[in-house]
Image (cartoon, rainbow, N blue to C red; front, side, top):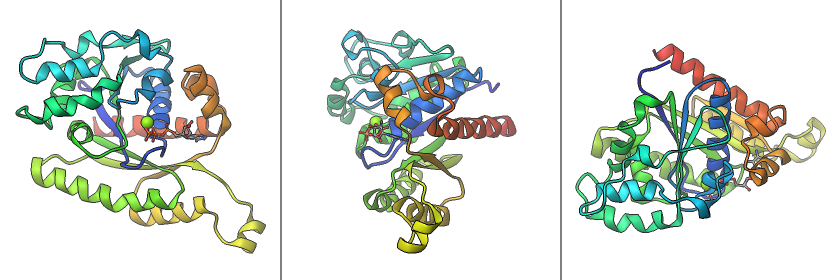
Length: 272
Ligand SMILES: Nc1ncnc2c1ncn2[C@@H]1O[C@H](COP(=O)(O)OP(=O)(O)OP(=O)(O)O)[C@@H](O)[C@H]1O
Ligand SMILES: [Mg+2]
């Protein structure tokens, strides 16, 4: 595959839109298809860390230590020393921990404060085909570091009105990043998660349900939009700490994420 891993960030300012679920699911399917995948948990909530079956309490070193090591005066902790193997073949993890939320203070006083994550990733990028970053649901330096590190941005939306309201803020932030750093994404992909279908009679009687309304809106605004259905297996797979790719690949959500993973791989082939 490619000589340098493609870096994909999962972002939305709004919480609970399916960032972690999408990151874990696509990491699982890409790894299952034979690609070497690194999942970087860059959210202090560390949901991706537990979602892949790693007990947060057993994590000795996390991405927090590597980030701090780039801020003046801290012990050097290369990212490769933080990488953990997971139970999923071909899938490695850089875990997170709650302390990462405090890292912004040290980052603030560091030169190159928005390229710290990118610098860490560069040191291991040739070891992987894909590097997937799970980001926190907030604005600020942590998220900005993810924006600047990413080649490809995946934005998961849930079918709620507040999710739609976040679109303008995200677009403005991407423009800001481009203006201030020159960095732009090769691709932006939209995922409408927790999609609920609607039977035709109900639609005639009551009009489009929220899932259909939001889908229509997203299709008008973006070129690449995928839908991931609401699926109870997602919750169960996260309880077990196994990605849907390995827990229930034939579930509705599993099939949807497989299609998205295949599309990502096809595009990588085309661009090489
Ligand atoms: N397709 C789906 N079907 C059913 N449940 C889902 C689906 N996608 C996500 N969920 C559930 O929705 C909730 C939020 O998902 P997730 O944690 O991935 O969102 P998030 O954007 O990462 O949240 P945060 O902003 O807090 O990091 C979780 O409980 C998850 O299990
Ligand atoms: Mg999350």
